[in-house]
Amino acid sequence: MCGIVGYVGNRPAVDLLLKGLKRLEYRGYDSAGIAVFHQNKLEIKKSEGRLENVEKLLNGSAPLYKASTSGLGHTRWATHGKPTTQNAHPHRTGHVVLVHNGIIENYQEIRDDLATRGHHPASETDSEFFGFLVLEEMNQGSSLAEAVRKSFARLEGASSVVVMSEKEPGVVIGARGGSPLVAGLDPNGGAILASDAQPIMDYTRDVYFLDVGEMVVGSSKGLEFLDISSGKKVSRPSTHLDWQPETMDKQGYPHYMLKEIYEQPRVLVDTLNGVVDRATAECFELAEHPGVALLRNAKDLKFVACGTSWHAALMAKYWIERWGKVPVDVELASEFRYRDALVTPGSLVVAISQSGETADTLSVVRDMKKKGVPTLAVTNVRGSTMSREADAAFFTSAGPEIGVAATKTFFAQMLMVLLWAGFLAEKNQPGSTRKLFDDLVKLPHLLEEFIRPEGQMAAAVKKAAHAVQDSKGFFFIGRGTSFPIALEGALKLKEIAYVHAEGYAGGELKHGPIAMIDEQMTVVVLAPQDGWRDKTVSNLEEVKARGAKIVGIGGVADGPLKKLCHHWIPLPDKGVLEEGLAPFLLTPVMQLFSYELALLRGTDVDKPRNLAKSVTVE
Image (cartoon, rainbow, N blue to C red; front, side):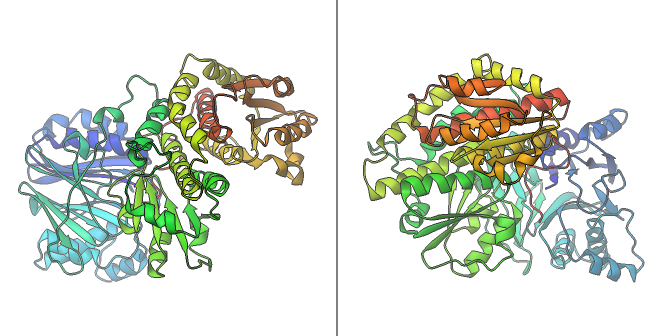
């Protein structure tokens, strides 16, 4: 989950590395550091805490390094060892300097072996041991590339490294054993390596995603890709990314998260246009794609995901079973992979991951492929590991998401599974989802008006958040398709405001959780005017009788519900949209509510503590 940047070329390395690491701080920000060549030596500046601490260290000495045109950098999410300066990357072992992402599972075995030859790390991390292995290989006559290849072959676990040596100052080596690694050619000459495409896109949109078991040698001559096990050259095609660089900037918003919430209407348009064949007059006609046949032929669907993506998968169960009439199971990938799950002939396993690198979800894909079970991926990153290893992949068009707490990627995932539901419905009964599709096409325009910063909804959310900011805890309740949104609302609040929050199906309150309800609790009730509305209101009556503060979210004309609530957030009139689309209106309300509470509590909205954007370790 750490952020890595490596560079050799003709540009000032310090500026490039710092700019790239700022793009990657969402991956981890426990500590940071860079190493650049100065007078044929790799000089390291690193610190615990944010990247800005490293910039402060450089303030007095940066002019000395301005001439440097090669180096590497790292921003860390701690796994082994505390988030201290001592454990921060880069690490040095002799003339070898490295940065590492992931976990070396057999590091104790390697540590014991190295100790017998007098090697002792200066840090508490597992990363440093790899440097000793490379150093030993080079001391025996291997080139840096060969030393990295031989050493990396000894590692177990999902990790990637980028390495430089003072013996070969014009070379940067990257190796991938699980955690993502991307490479790009600098148009000015040279090579850039990173753990994500975003730092590279400032210079080129044509990137190379390494496969597991591959390494890359970067130099002023360009890039060379090798198979780690054999050392033979491999052909690695580039992937063109159509993300606009300006979408990675805040564009005047105080936080990336807020910007990304307001981008959701455009995300709907871009994802819909990227998946549906709009050239036909048919509704939910998916564009020709390898995954379409997998969907068409599946007898049942098994979704696997983690976190927010799991909530999107829960939406798939409601929508696909309702309209598509195909059985759907939804599993936490971290549980599914460790139990003896029964997958029957005709099943299609669908993996949802924003990054396409989520370790547990990716492991399920690999396990299913070994068993001959067809797999389908949904991800926001073209060229990601999951998109390559699954039998087919559908791509959401959310663009880069910088805020650690997922917002617009969740929105795009929901849309994707809704499009599948409509496709399967039309396959069985043509024309049955015409109103749903027509309303879906109108949704971006309605949504844009609904969520505008100066609108009624935004004002109501801010007022409610101010009123309940001192609550000791929050329950989010909903029924039917509002239930997964309640779960997502509670998760968002926990992630960015560090408040105790739980999401529940409304009918479950009486089975235990209602014991927690008192005057110091706030209950957020999601009650759009759909088939579950009346049942949800009856659950709300139980809550109000016990004194909780109630924040209600419902139809603008729903007077009876409004009277039950202390604070009211109206949704657009029910006649505007098919009721099944209500989650697309509820979601930004939940996101903005959590955002406002986080602001009131003074937390770092874009970079919440202990979290990283892409969970590439188990």
